[in-house]
Structures are given as structure tokens and as C-alpha cells.
Length: 124
Image (cartoon, rainbow, N blue to C red):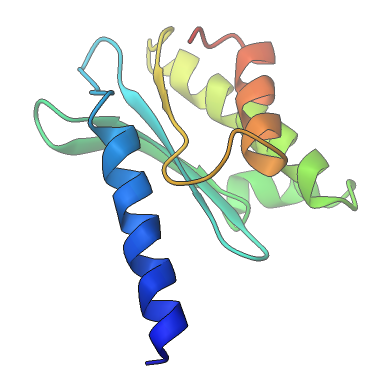
């Protein structure tokens, strides 16, 4: 592994730990965790007390894929994913969440996902 990429990975892990130190999900108010790859976006609701994932959704999920066929931009897909996740969460009786942006800036696709979730009815 190259010297620069190892340093970048260490910095990334430090940012992730710093963000996670401040938030914690409960069964009543789970943590909405976001993972972003170059092409896809993944979101899950996590109960940290019991260590369980309550629900998850991604741009690859079959339930979301039909809805995502229209928008061309990744940001538009992120917003639709947020709305779909909010629908799924509300059907399971979850109204409030704690937003975990992971190590990413609250910017671009991460921000669009959060706005979509808010428009879908989640409170955070």
C-alpha cells in the first residue's frame, strides 16, 4: 500500500471515530448511518443498544431501483433514497432518528439524502 493512501485512510478513520463519539442510536431513536461509494449510496437505521440494524436501503435495492430509474444525477438519486428510507422507517413506527454522516462532509449526496429523509417525515 502506498504511503499516502495509508495516511489518508488513518485520517478517515479518525474522522469517523470523532463523529461517532457524539452520537448513539436507541430503539426509539435509531442512528441513520450513511455510506457513500463512488457510484452508490447506502443508508441504514441502527439500534446501538442492541447492536442491530433495524432497516437498510441502498440505491441497489430492488424496492428503490424502479423509482431511481428516472433521475440522472447522483444527488437526485440520494434525495429519492432518503424519501424511500423515511417511508420504510415510518411504516416500522420510527419517527425520530440521529443522523450519522459517517466520515463524510454534510455536503452533496449526504446532504440530499438527509433532506429527502426530512421531506419523507423523519425528524432529526
